[in-house]
Image (cartoon, rainbow, N blue to C red):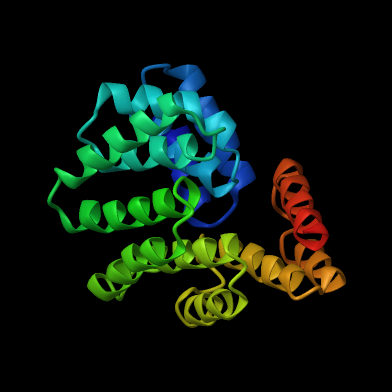
Length: 230
């Protein structure tokens, strides 16, 4: 199980999410109480935007270790993509409160990112969401993660210039060997769709994301179609 976990971690770092998923599931099958593997598995599901599959594991991880920022971030990232409800909103606010109690740089960055996502997705407040994420960028200029959220907030509100700004910043920072490269490529396709370039978006997906799991590709294509119809 340790070897499967290490290989799963390696494949995620290399951006090979299909292999990462396979090895992490094997690790957990061999040792059901393998919390590190479960935490890593949640991160893979988030990268694949399969939030429904990650939700129950993320909840389990959080309830076992509520002071772990990765567990808070994983549960929050999955839960906020579920249908909105008062119950879910209460839990999301609990997660925001708990991560603010952790004073490490990592947790401070995560808290700003999660607040931005909450303002964007739940309150539909573009200005406040951008305020949080710009603060994260100012405090942690070397980190790429705030720019991913910057893009996502801008995309939700159809702010194409801000999407392009995030893409340009990430292009300068993310190498082709980085596990973030696949996330960058997907966002390039999304920008093309917002520009009305559906053919260009599909070409990016087919050419540069052909090693991603089929389920991910289908979800991305559905997203592209919904953008062009809106």
